[in-house]
Image 1 (tube, helix red, strand yellow):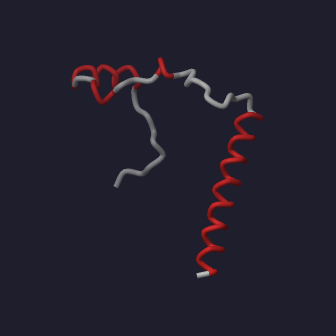
Image 2 (cartoon, rainbow, N blue to C red):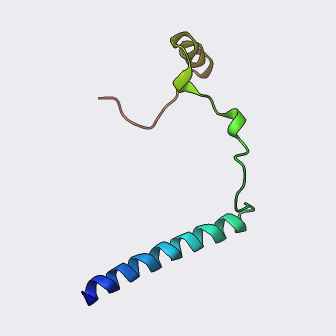
Image 3 (tube, one colour):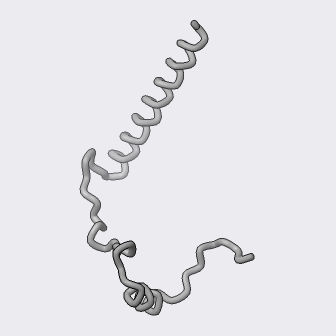
Length: 71
């Protein structure tokens, strides 16, 4: 029982530490706590595009290498 409590405490401490480091890194890099996504209007909603729109997008973008090998 004591070991389980210590393990839970370690997990909570680790989560707190990770959240604190991420918050400090965000603030250090010039971010704000609840900043708006500056690039939200650049994102494409491909889930709601028609097949024709997807083909046109593919023609505009061209070949994109994902880094994975085809098998």
